Length: 424
Image (cartoon, rainbow, N blue to C red; front, top):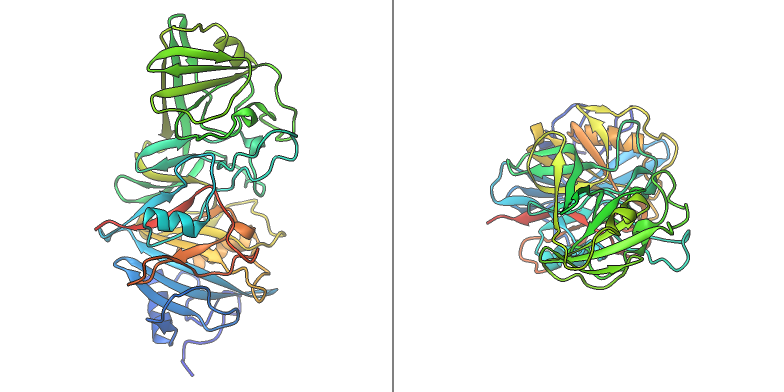
């Protein structure tokens, strides 16, 4: 019997010699030494209850299974480790090409040529509170892809997902800067609509929900889905009625070309921005007339001042090696998360297995502790439940395989994800 098998009395990694505080690289060495199935084909999810696996996917990218002991039994975690110091690899946003759209993680990864990936942010999955208004499928938080902002965050009361820990917000992101360093940060929208009568503040960018009294900008990145949901609910209540005081202005090549009394739908051409206003924002937009000169500007500003090549929404659970205060200790679920280690130079993409043998899952508080045990000092929670999916493309393969068991029995279409790409 391998000398490193066994479990910790505190409840942690099973089948490894990892202790609280042991670095990730050492843990991986122990896994390989103890006879995990290194070099085996990752041709899909392993049968529930099978032995853990491990494999190098590409330079700077490795995959492994880890069993986690809880008071409710064993939970299997699927982990892709990315060494950001390796110039052969980079992190990017998995997205379907439009903000208001959804695809499965494997579809997103194969379309974009990713080596591996996990599902991303919580998203607008249902719209039962407002009959006749379509669910948009768009994410809650900000998105940056290849350095380009795609959307900003919805108001706090309009989000989907578990309750946020104290002190966190919908603008919180996991990001990788142009310096190739991963961080947890907060992005806010800075934007304006310049008119002959003076500037108007911009309160939203390609969002399924706008702040009360604001103006939102919708570009070609939004897609063709109706913008009607943008004026429903309030900053504190997702289920509040839709506003009846709305207005929409279409700006093409710097001039107003159309107006309407309510948000519309349809593809937005390149070079065109649709401005949607509610309450006070609608009243300001009514002052604009066809042919008038208008300039719309917007950008996402990081609290840290860092310039990001990639960013995705979710919420922090671990900071500076300590779980955040107020994390939920009751509700268990299959979860997806990202850990940051080695001063921002190592990422751990983690998805729990949703197979019947492991479906007990983790609480958010347990998730933070397990990320720390895996070597992370910072941890970021992503969408879970039926969305939790981890895919990877082993060497020689042309398509990715789903390596965990999605709890719904099949992949769920999601708004975005964290992708691992070859930079060669």
